[in-house]
Length: 456
Image (cartoon, rainbow, N blue to C red; front, top):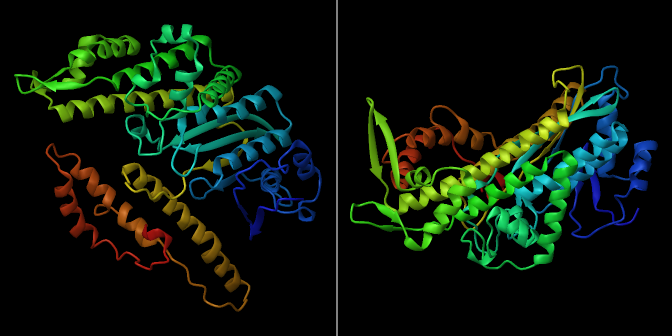
């Protein structure tokens, strides 16, 4: 087999992203890994899928066991493509309901449209984590469920240099017809603040739009649901163009040039214009039955505008995942007598020029995966050697337990302290940092080994 980009380290498959199409993932290759003894075949991701499927049914064991495949790696390593290959082989291998199998495979392009974006490192980077549960009965796929994590919703309102918003915004801006644009209230792409000026490759976005529309129909979305999603997306873009200016009362008003965007966003979200305006320019609270209205500064109004856009997008993404699960599970009860293969596809470690809260969460999740990997590769193997009386050298490795304790320990871990500090009304970054440092330094001593991956 040409293009040898895969190898084994123990029971772990290591694959290099070739950044090109290779003739090693076709149906003939898939059939070969479904019909031959795997030990006679070279390392391959289809072998991982087939071995997992065999173990699910019992294989050489007496008791069938649920299985899980963990896919990890740096950004651009090929995790999302590997997930697709695993799903394709498992669906093909199980030979279950053909229509259900096609629906499961169409979930990926649908979620990629709403959850992926172009970054400096990767043109199709997943900006969320997902855990896919394939449910089997009698060896055939009977349903599936998607669990989504850590959607990078801040990308809706801000992208760093060289990066783009989520694909779906470009799909609807460049893929919809003029008639559709008029129907959902879309204007020229160059007018929208949430979309960068460098919006080249219109042909690519048009093709992507057709794919996501086909995926929606294949999975089972109705035409009205498709239309509603496009209207909400258009509303998010409209909200981003609302700008404010100070008024004589110490608060802010919507700039006269942006009144049209406020009206458009309210209509697209299906809310009253006054209600949307109040969410932007003030905070209303109830104290002892009395309504108190606090005016926003310009910065607070800007933050409210962007927060609304991010929250609406995150809720929409969550609704899509829920809808997909309803369609893929059907009448299947997840607690019924079925078996499961889980596939975890999550971000790799990230270290940008500016790292935000999303990077903290992403890297912390990866630290936990790294800890599992260390335990699986080093500690468990050493324990097996000791049990079998095999002499071995003491293998040292960077144990990242102290990193996890630093962030997750209660009550003095970073996340617990951040949660506590954010509950105060007048918290500031410098004050929170001064509070965090002396507390967290008592939790653990961070490993400062320059070769430690965890230090970043």
